[in-house]
Length: 189
Image (cartoon, rainbow, N blue to C red; front, side, top):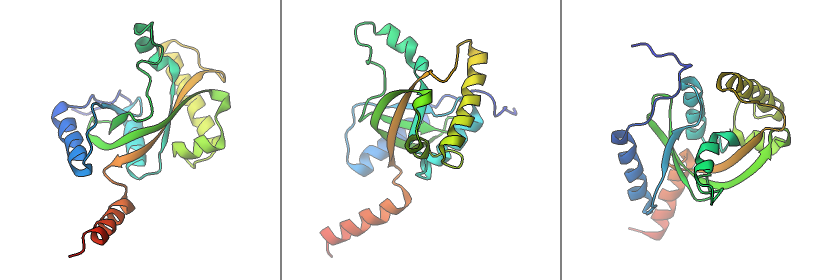
């Protein structure tokens, strides 16, 4: 079966995600009560690209139209922030096939309008050539295509939820050698 890379990302399978999550908790000696698992892109190709950027440590932020959270927020009429990402949340990042690639921990969340995106956020988002110009051009096109397909309006004042995060599993390339060095200093043989 030949799947189009323009299809929605495959959902992750518990049989793959749970061992990945448990390996992180064991290796890092952390107990985290919960997590979610999701691809960062809305197509398989985009999910693959963004997952690779996360694993490489280049992508450290994500912008999502706030409307993507609307159904969840509407269901929580009393608490408008119940299902929005929060600092400290963990996400298992999936590629377009639903395979877990990394675990990130949210460090900061903020709401901004599309026209309030700045150079700093564009750099942290880690896409294209890391410039604001590239980010704005790519996301204007992406959000416009989604708006047309899903029947919503995307414009310069569209509300976005910005999530900043750090990769916590697997450890970024240089981090493992630093951990090994620190362990050898604290545990001389």
